[in-house]
Image (cartoon, rainbow, N blue to C red):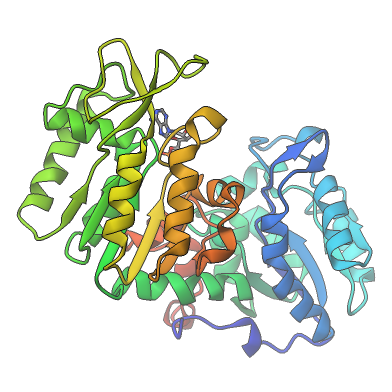
Length: 399
Ligand code: AMP
């Protein structure tokens, strides 16, 4: 964290402060169904207002692909934000140009303005110099607080961070780094890594990064079938492809030469299809032909619970099953409960797992749940995130 200028290092009084936030929230019928990401941005916004700054917020929402599209308007986010802040939020109908510029000029200290979706302009994702300049015209200060988008080299993340005359990282990014940096570099041992979800390819770099730091590795979700198949366990018609099996075989070898305790599913919740109403729990690891596994079973949960007894740190990424469907959610929710109840330091993040833990009701038992998906994984893999790199003190010093 010492590598970056902080929000608290900036003199904000009277200044127009652009904060890149991550308000990419789920919407239904033009209202926000999960306010977590908006709530996560509040400390930075409130800090700026307390300091007498003029707060101008920018975010993307969905994938409008450079076109104005009312479906992806940030208007519902503005209403939710106004309620949470208990104050008016000025809504701009665009993010660059005369309209927002005039509104930004009129904004008074202690006031908040929300720009319209940054991705209504192609320049955002293309990281175009012209679009960066237009954004830069609106404000005097740049604050990076959208942790979930730091892995993207977009105009409002890396682009603006690089050229802004006065910049720092916000309180959410600081909090993410406060938990994720020690985890990435030196997790207190014994360390358990719990991986789930569907895409082995997306997770392989994370397992690779931690290979010499983990004491226990749990693999669940659809990922597990590639590992089981590689060990010649019958997996029926569970989700799996041959390329993933080859990759899983390579990881299994890397684990076997190290002293890592590997926990793969010992039993499963199976069904003929994901939408079938009839489900069964297998007695052992074998999945009958014609059936597919969509969740881990109780023996697997018990094995993880026992292994957790000796663990100091656990990081969990990816659901243990198709948790979006109640029939296949139990393994994931049970895992949230047993990790929550363990004495280990408990961290989670990357994609669906934050939503799953939230739904399980065990969210408050975790030490930290990252707001990032891909950004969290890339950071933990040891990659340079373009949005962060651009703000490194030494980087900015040599521009
Ligand atoms: P990922 O994006 O790789 O983290 O994968 C998350 C998705 O994996 C979720 O939408 C889950 O529904 C899905 N998933 C987890 N377990 C299974 C499974 N056993 N079969 C099919 N999909 C699964």
